[in-house]
Image (cartoon, rainbow, N blue to C red):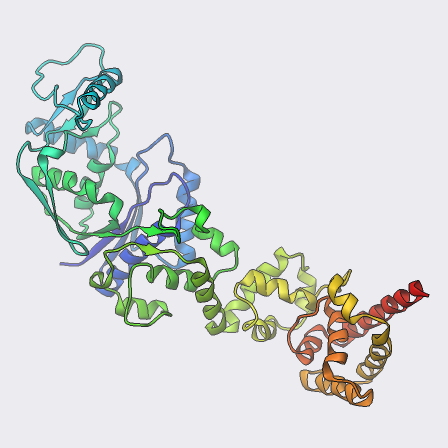
Length: 474
């Protein structure tokens, strides 16, 4: 039998790390076994589901490269199918109409609490033979009153539930829209899903779904409930732990390869290996290696993984992404087109940046002449003692016929030798003059990227700045 997995998000918000990990595990499982990965949109919560959320989920999955083999399938396109299956259960005496009002149900639960009982539906409409005039009816499934449900979980082993702890759940609302536990059963069966891999917050739903599957005489899928992701403080992962939606990581300058790599290691391991490309993930992934215990989200480790991927990803892939971030930082298209090849910038900066936003920020000096100098850097390096250094650098660099990393580096070193100064006493004033900051790539690399004309113009401006500072102190 061909393996078929699915990812079934509710479009009531964005795709967060937890949901994306579930999608990744299902996608990897299908790819590893030559199966199919289905995307199903569970949008029967009509009050909260939005088209915008659907689009954002699909966009995030596309960015991650988790392409579905089938779908997206919307549950709201299948309402007639759910109603037909509910009618099948009603006709077989395995479901019934419930006419209890919200007020009646609330009073029932309050009475149970007052008597120290677990609040649950007490089945009062199970034997009702006549409708209640004017009342909106739901359809409830007749949960077996005795026996146990055994869930054979591929991660947790066997988990047993007593049917006596399960009440008669609603499967169809008065407007004919199905509830989650019912629509999931119908969908998984109709779509031929062989493996249901989802978060362990769904484990308590599984016995209910198995009972419905058994009542309909349908084949049970294999189940695997993945432990939740926790923050560093041990509580359930939330935005306050630094966890945001997947597309926010894209905007923050993370590579999709790094996001996939970090997610796959949240609760899954393969020896001591930390970095995986997609093919390695597919070749190594198995549910047997998924941990039973919850995974801890570590923003610093996530950042480290992204840093490693920036270092190992080809410049040709990163350069168009860097262009987008530079444009977002205010660099004009014309400057990008007339500046040095972006692949050269990537090669220079890939070991100096943890994210693409950081790489763009550290590369703005190539295009934008500094309007001001960092106060601390200017105070330390653009002093009166630097004036003859800057003037001599302007002269020597202006005489260069070839402008490269090697020739500019040699020119700076020659000025240091000529003035009998340590290299830092020459390179640092120069660096602040041309970038506005005290940190940049190697001085030869920095000058080569900026270009001769811009370097000389910035040096002349720095000379004027130092001259004005000296004049003010007289």
